[in-house]
Length: 378
Picture 1 (cartoon, one colour):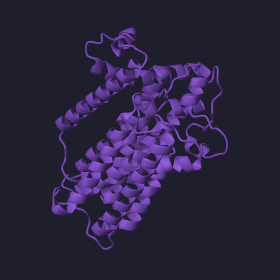
Picture 2 (tube, helix red, strand yellow):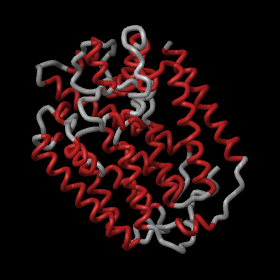
Picture 3 (tube, helix red, strand yellow):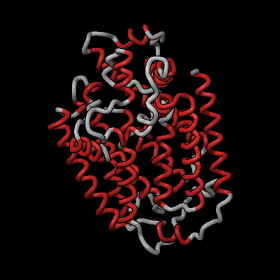
Picture 4 (cartoon, one colour):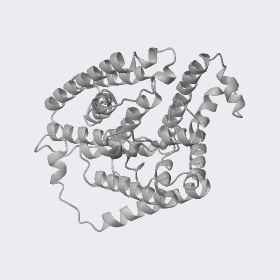
């Protein structure tokens, strides 16, 4: 079933892309006046909004560290556990979401910087400083994704806004990202197992690795464990557990209902009796499969492929700074698909509201379309 799902997912992804191309081909081209109206952001307005936003995000994060997490995760002796803090209650979740929004802030800052003719012009220095502050906040959480997400989105924005990257550049950046993920994962796991006087290299050997190159082992393990978890999900639903019929795909909405709402990771811990301290991610396929099996996986994959392709074609036709930012934002969700289903998380709705409000307040009416240096987007 694992192989059926993987091959089927690829088929339905390609089908979704093809359907988006057919759908878009039937739409008459809209006048480019829309790009002229929404093409740029007013620098002064944007600077004010970004300054207030960063101040509020840092304040929320500091409050969370002091009163909710119990300290800075990166400075905690067992930061593998401390970084996984999960808030309870509406107010706590709102504080967490806004305190975590430095990642989104970093994406917006990079999009604006890369849309400027000169990256290091004096007027861009405040935004470079904000980007540095965002990445510093990301490091304090001690999680790989807090750094990976804004930087991956930034690379995509750079590619379409400032300068086209060659395939060789993308390969090198991908290799560097993989090594970064493996190195941080290895250091974090080593610190965690040292608390129990266990050598993490021995753990890797028990898992079947040689442990001669532990960082590379960690890279492989980071991806392989997700497919192994998904394999167990295919053996669990619906044989031992009934399908959830949408509760996991739309968990962002269900999580707001009163009472405890189980995420897929919590369901797995309960039914498998694993008592895992984190979240056993099951690629993006785990969520739709738990809802409706292969049918749910096929429909979810098709719709997401249609959506992401439609975003690309819209960005290609109307290369406004907002359209490029939204496409860059959703591309990181695409990149993370072999790891987790980030589409089903509550922060997606929060992020889109923030980005839409940012564009509404900062856009410059009557501006000329942005001049991307990346050439033709096709």
